[in-house]
Length: 354
Image 1 (cartoon, rainbow, N blue to C red):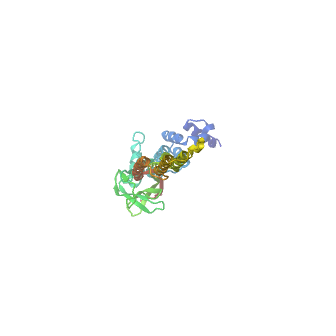
Image 2 (image 1 turned 135 degrees about the vertical axis):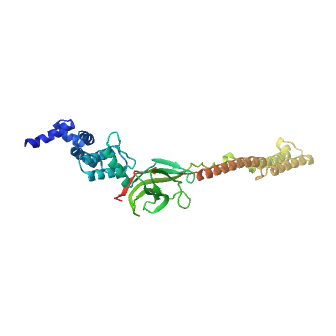
C-alpha cells in the first residue's frame, strides 16, 4: 500500500511539482512536463505524457510548433526507451506533418537524428505553402505555391474541380528538395475560371503508381472587374432653348395690326367728328393691317429658330462626346479582369506506407 502511494509522489518530484497539482499538470502543461521527464531520463514517463499531449492537440495538416515538438521528443523518448518501432512511427508522423522539419543537432544526439533521417528518406511527403490572399490578372500574373519534399520522390501538383476532376496540371515529375509552381489564373481553354472554387492537390508517389500521400487545400475564386462609370444624363428640356417659334408673338402682331387698322378707320367717330372716312385714312388703315399680317407671317407659329437650333446642337454634341468617352472608359475597365484567390487550410486526404 505504501508503494502505491509513493509512486505518484516520486512522479511529482521528478516533474518538480507537489502531489496536489499532478492532475492539473497532466491536462494543462503536458508538453513541458514530457520534455522535463525526457531531460531527466524518465523516458517511459515522457512518452506517456507526450502521447497524451499529442492526442489532446489532435491531428492537423498544418505544421504546428507544439505538435512537432511533442512528436520529436516522443520519438526520442521511444527510441531511448527501447521501442524503435514506436520511435519510427512518431518520426514518420512528424515527417508527414512537416516535410521541412529537421531535429536540432544541439538538442538531440546522433542516435536520434540518424534514425529520423532514415525515416525521412523512407517517407514520401510534400508540403505546399501558398499566400492566404492573392489577386492576379489572369494570363498576365501568376498564383504561386512553394512545394517542399521530405526526400527525393515523384510529385504531382494539380488543380482540380471541387468534385475531384482534373482542372489544370501544374507539375508532374521528380522533386528532390523544393520547387515553385505557378498558375496563370486561366482555365484549360485560356479563359478566366467560370467556377468559384478549386482544389490545389499535391500527391506524393512512392515506388508504385498510386500516391502514398495526398495533401489538398481549397482555393476560393472571385473574378472581379473595375468599377464602371455612370452614363452622363442627356440634356433635359429645361437645358435646351425652344427651336420653334411660339404662337404668342404672331397672334400679338396680327391682332395689333387689326386693332390699329380699325382704330384708324373709326377714329373720327370715336372723337365725335362728322368727317366721313376718306381715301387716305383707309390707305393708312390698310397699311397698318398689312403690317399686322406681315408681322404674323414673320412670327408665324412653328417657325424654326436657327440660333436656338445651333445652340441646342452644340449642347447635344458635347453630351455625345462625354457619352462616347464614358463608354470607352467602361469598356477598358470591364476588360481589366482581376482574379482574387483565397487559400484555405490544408488537409491530408491519404497517407500510407509506400
